[in-house]
Length: 383
Ligand code: UT7
Image 1: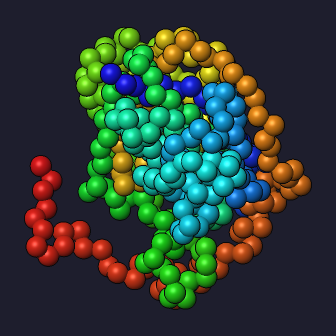
Image 2: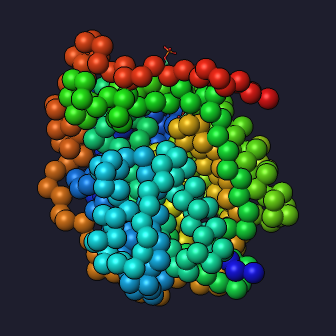
């Protein structure tokens, strides 16, 4: 049997830190509310495009694996915040790395994009389609955040991380996963203003409004991640007690605590980053994985559970077996260009460019095509 071992890992976090106090300078919110409701104290704001963060994280992951960029057969770019719709973003990382022998594809399942990408790439390695793959989770949310909407703007941050997968005869990498989608709840998280529905009809480019039902997402996320974890563990015949570490999607500390409780994993086995980075969507799980390795929390041969959820509402959970090596083979000199501005200055510059409220009043933030929940000829099956 062939498996897809994780042999390299790297992260890239932009240096500018946005604190809860910074948010309270322009929002009716407080450090106390954000900390007690979400567990977040600060998040990062990027001064560079997403591809730049992804390329630095990828160069670090390759160096960690001791693999040359030319040896990559596949690049998977997991994100819902691509710098451009066309060309795809994976090609942007490819050209920066010089990985000219690789195929390159983007995957967007919102916050689960890295985990879905991990499934796709692992399956291709296991099937023998490719031998060496790079899987990226990256998100640049700050430019399209609905900054004056306190329901969402306190929750998110920017960042990137990547892992290298290599074909192996040892039983390593993803041992079992469950992928699901609670599509009937897809309206609970929608970013208006991005995508073809809004193109060429008078919306100032980049203006966005977020539809967001936090409580409904919370409820479904907890149930969805707990059930996905149960199914993933059953698929590979591993008992919950055998999990050494849980590295979950980090959208809210209270969500993580509830998932751990339902899944039967004690909190001392859960690795947390939510306090320092907030929700980096697709970048959250891989950044946490990299930091767990750096902190010595991933031991040789460890079994790791990685549950996630995101817009769609996609849900998933992955059971991963680690190899013997928990330290990098090498390091990369890749760095982001220096940043001159504070996070608050970066955010206020974005806020100053927004014309969304006017666009909304003019009725321009409605999608071009009204969405039929059950199009003619289809029968809804909610069973
Ligand atoms: O990864 C996918 C995206 N992530 C998520 O979808 C996160 C899922 N949901 C959540 O994490 C939580 O539902 C939230 C953190 C978003 C909200 O927590 P909650 O405990 O569900 O609060 P709530 O929505 O019930 O709001 C409680 C109160 C409301 O005021 P009233 O109606 O009780 O007077 C809100 O208006 O808190 C108010 N509120 C705020 N107050 C200060 C909402 N946002 C804020 C804020 N600062 N930022």
